[in-house]
Length: 277
Length: 299
Image (cartoon, each protein chain N blue to C red):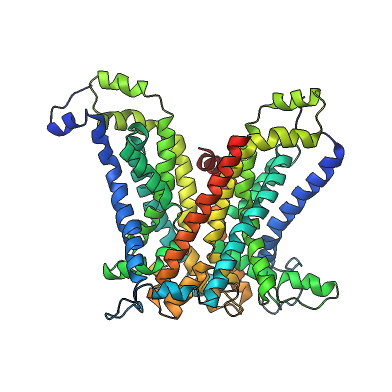
């Protein structure tokens, strides 16, 4: 029998009630969104009532007028290429930064971590006009490079702290066997990076998929828009049509929520890795 | 293993040569982070409108203007409210939920999954979901207000209600992060300390104060820093819920930059706001981090 923090029954009841309240508060907005999305505009019943019949028109409107499916494909493209770059460049950079603790490398690592604090909106004006000059506005490569740079600090940080925990003895043995450092990196380090790579993919993937602040401006053409700005734009064009806005929101939430329900252990492990390393 | 004899392969017998592996990352940072920062600083000293070829240098005029601009001063106030307000509530909720979920009970895993769920939702979408909830005529919350016999409340178009709504929405969305950080911290505390405290006759409150809090301190620093940066950067939720309104009353610095650049076409001025926002986040976060670190040494 474990002895833990709360012993008395009179603590357990309010604590349990509080958790129930939090679950209620977190689920209610989603329930309301579902109820609104499945009701026609003519249905004047309370938003709290379960829809009496299934009504799909709101979803059809969101898909046809809001171009939600195109946006999802765009997001899929941008997110997969960006994740690939984030993992590759992050693992590359993490290796020397973990193994060579020179003064210069410490400065490099600190600078990279400092980049995490830069709010996207603070560089909006210069970034947008720079992208304009190099014809990067409304291009996939433009937004991919921007979001990759934005998530790279987290990736470098996770890889370098993970590599620091790999025993150096492995590499010393390989060096004696005549491997150079490139071979050591390819044959010894890379295969060991699978667990941390899962965390990097999940954490940065969520950010990239949900990115709005810069995608909103860099991808202004409806055909190129990713999911978050597409739903934002659809919402502001049709804010009188709350049912369709609700349907669009649900469609946007669906992919990540489904992934989360299947892989929730990895999602939470990724969060812990990023916070406690 | 085969040994290649090329000069490149020879070079990589030197450990220092691997430093080249971080060059691609540094190039990306140079182009998409450091150059825009410096370029932004330059624009902030001009009266550029964002597209014209002609502009002039105006020295510190934009910065002087910032401190006379009541909309900007109000945005600073709001940014601090969002930053500190969300951070405080997120720590209270996150810690309380984590302490409860640290015990085994039926539905523990379900609770954790649900409370963390909104973290994955794009803040824009979260904003839309809460917009439906808080809408004046068609919102679910006012349905209840009317049912209870009160007048509808304009949650999003009365300044104070709107500020509170934004803080609550962002708090609820991201309190799962604090919960997970505190839960991980709590699970690192060895049970034997509580057993010893119980044998010594410590009360629950004493055990919490003298064991839980000191052990959890590093987790507090991490959680506060993450939440504070997130709150000070707040943009998406405001853009959807109020778009800075009514008037300019609920703008954060981020949303005011957006309005100043794209609606008012005042790129120079918007750029000076950007420089200010970055400096403010840097100073506030580093100061708070130092203060919290001092507390850690004393424990």
